[in-house]
Amino acid sequence: METSPYEGCRIVRLGSFRSLDLKTDSLTKMDNLKLLHLNDVHLTGSYEDFSEDLRWLCWRQFDLRAIPSGLFFKSLVAIDMRDSKLKVLPLLKTLNLQSSKSLSAIRSIYRLPNIETLLLCQCYELVDVCKTIGDLMNLALLDMSECPKLNRKLIRFSSRER
Figure 1 (cartoon, rainbow, N blue to C red):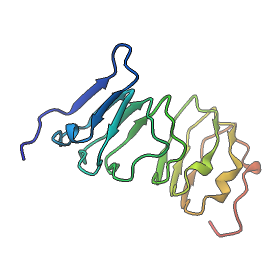
Figure 2 (figure 1 turned 45 degrees about the horizontal axis):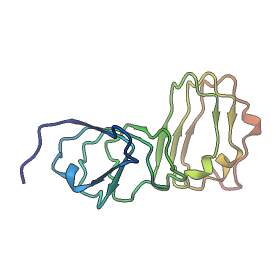
Figure 3 (figure 1 turned 60 degrees about the vertical axis):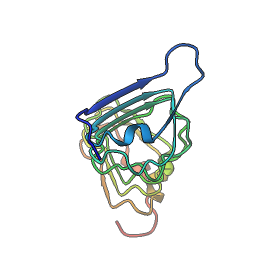
């Protein structure tokens, strides 16, 4: 199979179309793809042949309620899913928000049931973290250092050892 030299792809709905429908096959030959920007695009098909080098995914108006299980996230370092219908991130294991200087609250953390690593260090404006953070059974590493405004006394963990 021939490979594509392209490392970035932007597909944006133009005009008055409701949304742009594409098959995932149209992107599978782009195996060097590192940046993918989709705007109001509905993809159908298998996600298993997407580029394993994908580092940045911007998928605005993402129309599914969960990220497809076949989508490969090994190299992904940034996700932008503004205006999405996303309800849960069941596969997400690492969330690094370190040095997010404007971040003031983390809510609905229970929607990340498999999270193992949560890095919130150096979030200087962070004041509030959802109480359900203590119920995350897979959470192995939580770094909230250098968050001077955060009241850690309000955070409770389940009775298991940390």
